[in-house]
Length: 108
Image (tube, rainbow, N blue to C red):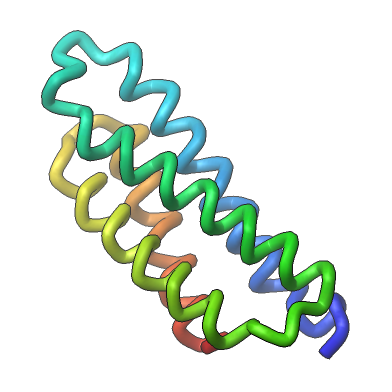
């Protein structure tokens, strides 16, 4: 399949990556950073995976299902971690991760 067939997914992945990077940055500046360690780690993992899948789709990878399955699992984990925190950036990130996990499951 060509890149054009994945435009919605690519956009969703990019939005999730941006939300995770924003959350990561904001978490590092929170007063009680010790409570944010899990969120910071998941943000980093999720942003990296979303970026990887986005690039793989643009390249036309033959491993769409395999990478999308892994990305969905990571997005779900990040969603759950971010939901635990009341910060606005965490809640926005959780929503982006939830949407991205759903999109990746459909792709897989």
